[in-house]
Image 1 (cartoon, each protein chain N blue to C red):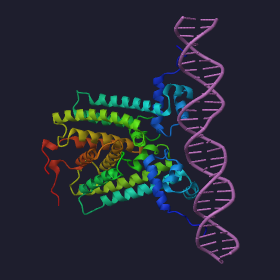
Image 2 (spheres, each protein chain N blue to C red; image 1 turned 135 degrees about the vertical axis):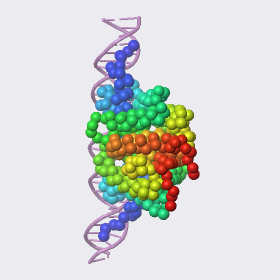
Image 3 (cartoon, chains in turn green, yellow, cyan, brown; image 1 turned 120 degrees about the vertical axis):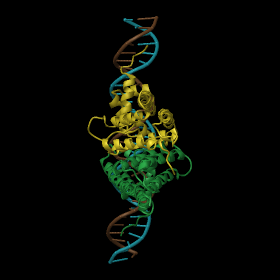
Image 4 (cartoon, helix red, strand yellow; image 1 turned 60 degrees about the vertical axis):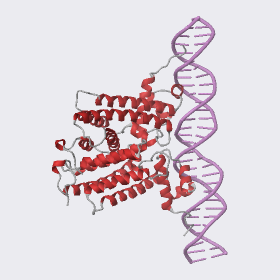
Length: 207
Length: 207
DNA sequence: CTAGTTTTGGAATGAACGATACAAAAGGAG
DNA sequence: CTCCTTTTGTATCGTTCATTCCAAAACTAG
């Protein structure tokens, strides 16, 4: 009983996520959050306790969404492993430039938060750590499959390759925020994929 | 004439740079700047005009220092090009873990600022853009030299490879802030170098 | 020594911050 | 209808923010 909510909590969370994504944690004021969600201060504090708590939830929402999307691309067992990695890069690039027209890319909330807060906010760092593990797991998995199939070099272990891919994706995100164009990102991705391929002499025929 | 300064401007700038580096622009207060530089508010405003102006100067100081160091490593004409790239990666990794023991790496002020401010501060974006050009120039140069010497693949152009290396370095910086260890960064760097090498036996790759 | 100019410390500025208090409003439960 | 609980709008809290003001201090040129 009691008066029912006049808004959808999920929608509000999504709107808050977007503002934090665009402006960062510190530069986002509670006023900004009110404007973006359409809620009053009371509703925000009544529902999400504090700016910090709301940020942690918005971050979790983002990470769940993005990591699920990454997993969906990587677990497409019908395609060869390297193709799945290429598809992941393509989806990263698309995501980076899908934004409405003008201005630079706003990058990735995960990268942005790692840079802005991971060093001085233990709670946030832990959330990011868990998500990183999840993403690295997915990458290792597909890389191991690729190694078994002979499409991916076995000269480096899957963990190192996974960390490499994760770093390249992060670097692409930063590059996009730094003004790099789509073609630049595509060159970066293509070069990264090169590093995964086995030496020419060691390649075997694909099934 | 008039009363002379009681402090060294360069030292103050360096101290300010360090605080901005550790905490970011927004999270650094003028109080923090006073504490770090040892100056009073009056001296800071009298010398640097505003927090924003001080930040731009501190950023410029950082970029000049770091880009000069990168150029010094890359322009060591006595070593083969790929060796110079390896040395660059080694210096990035060393820089990332040179900090006194405890805590995560604080990353790179250039990356941090690109993420935090490039999207909404045109002045800062322009400073970063100029520095990026300078760094990409240095990378292209060494990569072209490597291509001429046959140490670096000619299957991708030097510009794409330069952007790739720059992105990987940025990604390593973010990874370090995300808690990655030295071994992880070394694997990333080694894998990135793999992508530069020509196909085994200088054979051309087939589609 | 003095006049002139700059730096310096410390207090004060108004604006914006995150967060709270409180009463009116709203709707379900009986 | 009337409780009773929860949400909501508004006003406000104390703090902190970047910045400015001002008078005392410090040094130099004459």
